[in-house]
Image (cartoon, rainbow, N blue to C red; front, side, top):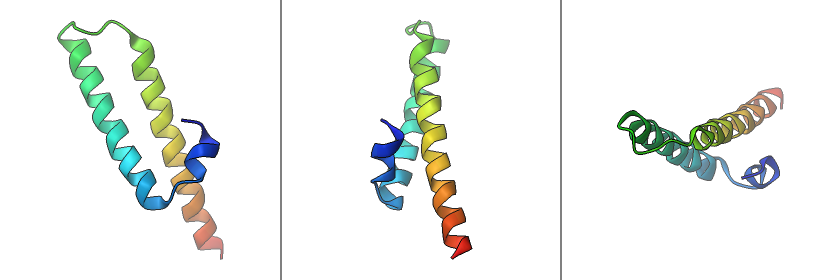
Length: 67
């Protein structure tokens, strides 16, 4: 999901997406460790989505502190 699309979501929805992304990352790592998964690109994509969500949440936190 693109950053612009994530910015349109509320904080609660972002936290839900973050939890889901962490769960997906855990599942991907598990399937990699048992040898079912061989595509490392999915792990990279999920890590980037987590970073995007965390960045947007931090931007909002800083904006709230400034005002």
